[in-house]
Length: 600
Image (cartoon, rainbow, N blue to C red; front, side):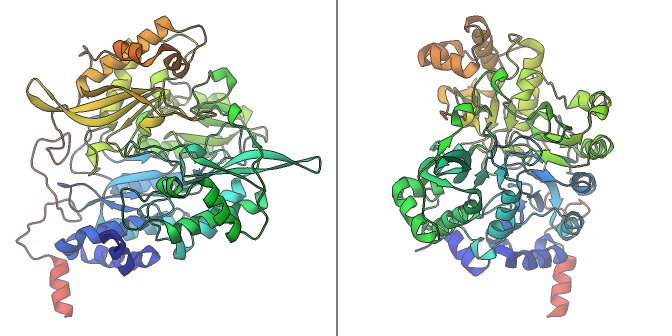
């Protein structure tokens, strides 16, 4: 017997959802029958439209999608203008104000505080410049991740055309839209490993083989990686090498296999990583052999030993991210900006788009670490770009804490999260930057914060990973954080070991400072944080990670615990509200209801 969500999807899913969503938008929020809202909200996610949490009724988040983080000239400006006009909430965030966008860990963008009635017009404006929200959420293939500078920087295997083909022909296939659960695809063509194949449901990694004495380039295939539920898995190798012209068919074969055979009953155990657990890599390889029209080859030699992206290695061995100034293969430059916790006000988004056009081609790329990249900057424009005031705020050379930071949405909007994340992490970063010194050769400490165990902030792969919890302090329930250390992607992917649990949130900055200062004092010369953690031992790390209240840090919502409708407002929720933001009177007949009755 399928679970309830499968029943909902059987009734209506995929591209067909859009027409009904537009009908609800035309008739207004209250046209969605209250007893059917959970069903419709689940369906809306396919089109990137997510209802906010309890207390924020009638407000929605919209997630955009692309292939590998590429935004063509004009697209970022359109997104910023939409955010400026439509993404304004009834109260301001104390750190970020009102009307902003969030860059995500899958190289996409999210908008908040949207009204359902505005969704069709937002779609019209975004789609006019080629920006889509299709397949951005729900039980679908999510945004395809790839090297954000694919086609512009050195790649062992070129991947830009492959990313576009997977986007159009696999993600774009409505017959595959209804997956058992969300499904992540990554394609890495560079030797840095920046698409993070190890934590995706199917990942292609660059590899090489000898064929009759001649070198052949292509990809090794891994499946069943992922985070969440504190049951993370490293993607398992299939001992399979595919040539570039075989790669798309191979991805499609695994997608179709999981689509047909994946568990649709137990949603807590039906992600692709559990599918791989159950069948095993060899059985999956055999199944793909039956589905593919070419003879399978054994895995080639990969470049995992050279991976540096979030791999815990010294920076001189290669880039950990795309923040900074780098050479393109065409003689131009790309400039990656650091956006702390991935949130940028709409006016800054528009200015960033202006700078991308004034100094580069107008093209902007997005990274898996919640940061944007200005592409195609000639040498002659570089010095003037770097002196622009906006780059003093979003620096290409930020302090080590800002450069390594990521955070999920948190309780501000997410119904699953247990703690607020974005504002809290922003304040932590500011405090750590002011008070905590690091050796000159340490240019980043990776701090990842997830509001719950779903781990959308990828805490499991951080130098220092934070996950939201609850605890009691002085007899009062407070927001708290579990803290772990030693995660990272690379040749030997590892997930964090927990060192402290349920630490009151206002004591976490002190804990991080104590731990990082111990690292600075005790490390061997040149030793990275991850290397130091591995060498030091768990018991010693636990002793060094001492929680502490600190001066100069004020937690933004320590006692909220998801009790309020919005973490930064103690008043009554205005929701649900009309399109103009005024509260709706539940006893008053809406225009939508009147129109519906008149048409009966």
